[in-house]
Every structure is written in C-alpha cells, then in structure tokens.
Image 1 (spheres, rainbow, N blue to C red):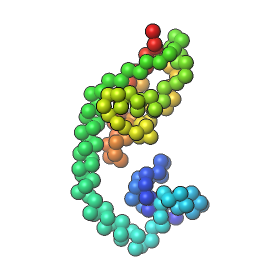
Image 2: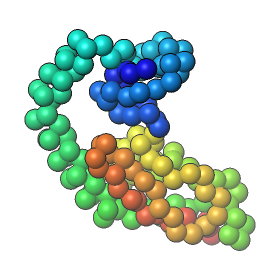
Image 3: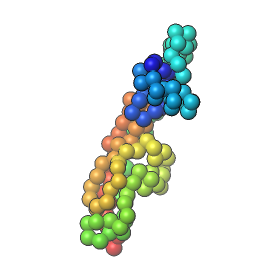
Length: 146
C-alpha cells in the first residue's frame, strides 16, 4: 500500500515521503491517526508541486540546521548524577540531555535526541537529528556527585 506521510513517523519515513507499507499498518494505524493519506495519482501530482515550491525554503532550513549543528559541536555537557561507585542511582535519558542543552542556550526537543538509557558514569555520545539531512553526534560525560 502506497501512502504519503503527513508527518515524520519513526522507522517509516519523513513528512511528504511516499512510502510502501503493509496494508493493515496503513489502514489500521497510519491513516486513522492522521499520519498518512493514500497516494493516489492526483495526490502525487499535488505533492510534487508542493515539494517544488518548498525547495527554496528547504535550503534555508538546512542551512540553519547546519549552523545549529556547528554550535552544538562546541558545547560540552557534563551531567552530574548521584552514584555509588560507577553505577548511577537512577538513569540518564534524553530528557536530561535536553535539559542541559536548554541551559546551554539550545532548545532541542527530546524526541530528536537518541542516547538510550544510561546507568553508569563515563563518556557517552548522543545523536541529535536537527533535520532529515543534518544529524550531529553530541558527546557528553556523566560524573558522580560529590
């Protein structure tokens, strides 16, 4: 089943992509939730025209995302957490990284940050997706509270 995505869907595609999915997934989840619509020939023509008009705006968005990526590479994040030895009491997640980025002056939504759940002190790396073409590796360190 061919569908046009109305918004980004994780592990499926990005907004305005034409994707092929299993019929049940499209019919029972993507279309009723408003994430996609059927890719009819007329809908494909409308999408092509919209993408053509949006190409200039997209170039500016990518340039802005690259600028933010350069700023993020300069940011050093040190997260302090309560720990017993190397093992943390609790864990560090995307939410904690997003909070530290906002304190540093970069407001990035936590759903665009991928780091996993971390339960030990040390140096780690998170992936920040600013745009479908701009992905940044963000190194950070977790240290134990004194």
